[in-house]
Length: 286
Image (tube, helix red, strand yellow):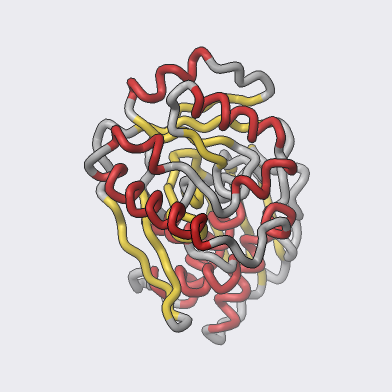
């Protein structure tokens, strides 16, 4: 199950990227108890009982389909950093819902539309869930309550680099500072960048610096993550197409090798740098 980066700058709540930092999970039905065994990211910090997010999602899915499980054993080997804007909660939600669906429908192919619909209802936005579920870069939306997505064919020269800070930031905190309204000028600027970003990712990466500018959320979240805000500004001044990953505080750069090269000269003290690839979506092994 891959992690993800939401927004990609201006694509607030609708553009997502699956990254090859992945969690591996197995779920099996046992007797009458809940067992949670976690290694890697979150080990010793996340719940080890029925309140674990993946377990809650499995049980919710089973309940929706009228299936009762005496008990469950969850094994999770986690690589996605928690609370860093890299889609750990969306990955857990998608994994749990998918596992619950498969347990309730043995032998059937997973209904990914159902998983995306339920995951979006729980998360409140579809970008991370769609990316984790389907892989690559996705545009996702909600129309009259129905969630859908399209996958983008990313230019083969485009690469991704992530800088992960030591401290996290709760998504609910990052969303709380966003304004209810923006000016018409900001809306026009935002729409132009989103349109340019979709095309730049697919066929014109030379425009990625312009296309990753954001007027909707990053300016309002800056005070919550000053180190990340500084790093994004420094990278962009050097010509690197950099954004805050999701709600932050990780930083994502999107570009060709030539566009990302100046990042080597930018001070990123306090961040761990990872050069990542776009990942395939949820992979199931029965």
